[in-house]
Length: 86
Image 1: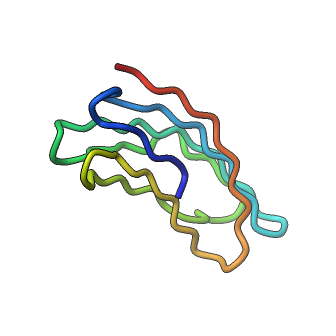
Image 2: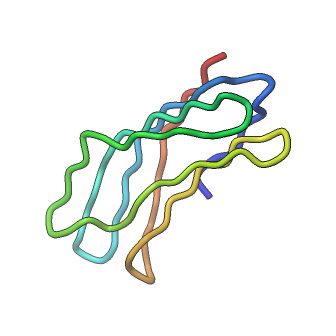
């Protein structure tokens, strides 16, 4: 999981995601927005040196919004920068 935030406090989030798997690297930006029931996301500016290393999903469960990164490789190292907006 990349992040979890309170849906009553924040309406959206922006993420810069850096991933490394061995000698393969990937960076992308992701925006997440929710309407209280459903989370919507877009992943853009995705750059990698060999092939895509994974994908991002988001969901609303209870009072929170969850943002996940699912890697293709068994060993992915993920670093994120996060901003939340009301």
